[in-house]
Image (cartoon, rainbow over all chains, first blue to last red; front, side, top):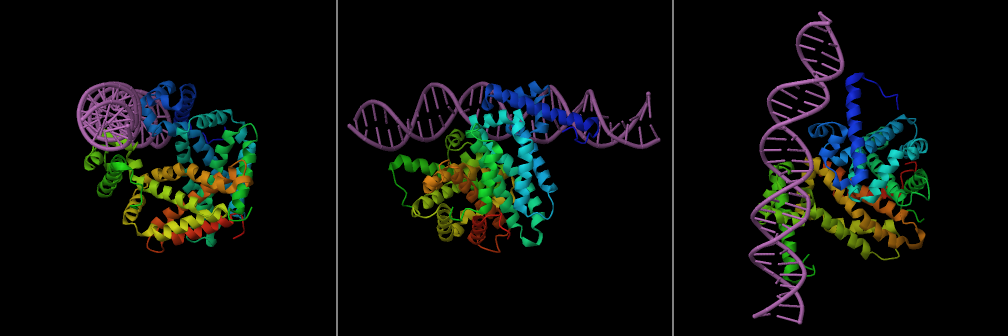
Length: 202
Length: 202
DNA sequence: CCTGAACTTGCCTGTTGCGCAACTTTGCCC
DNA sequence: GGGCAAAGTTGCGCAACAGGCAAGTTCAGG
């Protein structure tokens, strides 16, 4: 994590503010419930003005899901890093495997936030937004891999959308039975299933 | 459409108000752009108080996508009406085929609204919400068909999510090139592709 | 016709997003 | 170091919004 390009004080301070706002949002949401917190309170707790909050996030939810966004961007990076020869779906699942087996399940912050989503279905909407926001990004990644096989780009978008939908469903399923299996076990099975297609008999 | 159960004046009036609000929202959005209209204006145009708007919709977007919501519910109904013996994915695609070949492309209101979404990417978020809102509903439908084959219900949710994701992507793709093909042609190909799975070579 | 439930409305309060214009901090070149 | 431009922060203010509450209005069923 410390490998982040330390681009001078300015960049670091900005990132620190963003992180502070995110953490304040998460802590307050955990403490009082996500619907009972105000932007004011978050800004206060982060030691920053309400107006400044608006400079970083458009609303509470965006702040609350900041970590998710970063996580997903990281995943996009892992996809990009896969060998170019790999077919799209393989690259996606492989990247997800790398990501979740190594980092995913251990982050306590992630677990806390996940529980929050589970307890408050109103956040599910925001979660959907987070996934959707990265769909285009991921789709571009996939398009590169398809190259000539997919001139219209439709396949790439379908693959990206399906991949993210599967991850999202897996996450929600896992959240409902966190004890039974590790997240990646659920996700792996689901990706496998989706990869083989749903039109096949069983 | 007139087959709707005419449950007394009260129900009909309520539905009329909802419809009026939806139409007002759509017309105003088409005329001035979706970001330049207020709830007040919509309520005014629908001949109703602003407070009443809140009794029907939580916000502009929800009003604007009311027709989409209804359309999707209709689709759910068609799925339910498919023979019980049909495997889930077959039932879903068949229902979609019925729906879109018969009704979909002809509705001018739908086309107008679709163009609106295309012109204003800010609405894409709301569109995602609409699809997500029906995912659980559709997922229950699918679960019934899986029965014993899917005790945990994960498959059902995966299938529903994938199906809707494919429809959503198809819609967006079609919106970008409406002239080239009919919507259902795009969607059919996409569903076919997804049905066979993305892990297969090509 | 009458009573209760459902629906509408106005009023009001707390919250929010964002434009604007100071003001402070940081990056950089001399 | 000194100073200038760019970037970041803040307070102010405004239009818009969600939704509670209570008084009016309309509908349904006896």
